[in-house]
Amino acid sequence: MKIKNICCIGAGYVGGPTMAVIAQKCPHIKVTVVDINEARIAAWNDKDLSKLPVFEPGLDDIVKGARDRNLFFSTDVDKAIDEAEMIFISVNTPTKTYGKGKGMAADLKYIELCARQIARVSKTDKIVVEKSTLPVRTASAIKSILDNTGNHVQFQILSNPEFLAEGTAVPDLLNPDRVLIGGDTTPEGAIAVNALVEVYENWVPRAQILTTNVWSSELSKLTANAFLAQRVSSINAMSELCEKTGADVDEVAKAIGMDSRIGPKFLKASVGFGGSCFQKDILNLVYIAKSYGLDKVADYWEQVIIMNNHQKQRFSDNIVNTLYNTVSGKKITFLGWAFKKDTNDTRESAAINVADNLLSEQAEISVYDPKVVAERIYADLDYLNTRTEEENKRLLKVSKDPYQACNQSHAIAVLTEWDEFTTYDWERIYKNMKKPAFVFDGRGILDQETLENIGFVYYKIGSGVE
Ligand code: UDX
Ligand code: UDX
Image (cartoon, rainbow, N blue to C red; front, side, top):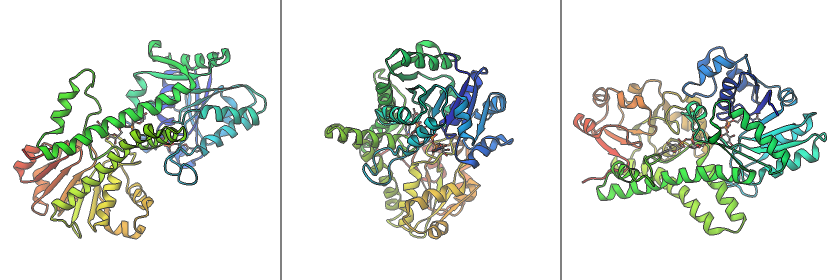
């Protein structure tokens, strides 16, 4: 079965870049990305490519090449569903904020809405691909909705989880370690799986395209994110011990990473992991394990989240303790707000909690991030509901210039590992700060010796006094 039309519901961080790359690599396929959010679609269609709603290095060029050729962004969801033989569901699946499973389970209401819409509109057979990360066995819920409310057309459900990381979405999509496709083990299932394999084969070697049953595919995605997050929490746990013992966590990471069984990646100690996936997926895993009565399994994975929360808390505690036990009325500068470098995404960013803790201690915060806009920063804080919007606006200022952000400040906290932070004129920054001038490097990116020679009191996560 040859696919000629693809529809993707959800023009977010996953749907947008993934479809742009499919369109670039498959000029013979018409790819339409739809979203209910009109402003987002308008931004994807903006002539000014710097206005794309998702910032990813290299994405603008790909969109430029494919847009209006075989890549389209639209709010006409029905039309795109009707035309397509293959429909990707790439809507968000936030943690539930109400009812059973509140704070843990994934909220599948958008997925269900999509399934109902697909069922209502479809007049021809469709392959429905789950791109969103979903709890195991979601495919059977989607199938039941499609089969029971549809117009008696045939639906095949595939799971094709996304492994791209933000900030490197384009290279991750162009050269994936593997592509995972789960489908039914029936002959019809195999045909559907093969149709998607053929799409990816346009640029991914066949040996790297893995096919499994649907449940293995769904669970593999949660497992991959849980393992990755666990590595970060493991090295962060060691970072606290390093600070007490005089070890340096980067040296420890290097030493263990050279063991080929451990490997060097994902061992960078930090102020805590963020992003839309890690916490949500682990909470989801914990919830699923509990729902099967597997309490020990649930507790094991929950510890990864507990450690991450602790890491954020102890970072802000350390700032307060070091600044003579009070930050009230003191200006503290945040370099970075995004959850990692090279993205404008701030979901679950450690910066949000660290700021919230310090604001509760009456600090005055000044934020500079090269890609995150002020509205986003205030929205992140307001969402926590710790204080009024007016108070957040009064206590936290967003600056477009890093030097201005650091001016007259008591301490600088590095929350995101943006490369540009390492290239600043730190002498100039030092001169304009209150003394002693403190730097709390939550990402371990600045050069300790240089900063100390200038006169800074430098604190790096995971580095203790010898
Ligand atoms: C993705 C995945 O889909 C999610 O499962 C994963 O865990 C995180 O990454 P992402 O692309 O980052 O989500 O989400 P987001 O940027 O919020 O985009 C989702 C889009 O879907 C939004 O633009 C939203 O407007 C749209 N949407 C949502 C619809 O078009 N229809 C709906 O019914 C719901
Ligand atoms: C993650 C997975 O990597 C990706 O495969 C999946 O599809 C989505 O979830 P993402 O959240 O975009 O991707 O970014 P990632 O690079 O995994 O970073 C997550 C968080 O962990 C960031 O806050 C990052 O700063 C932090 N991190 C990562 C560390 O603190 N140390 C590390 O060594 C690696």
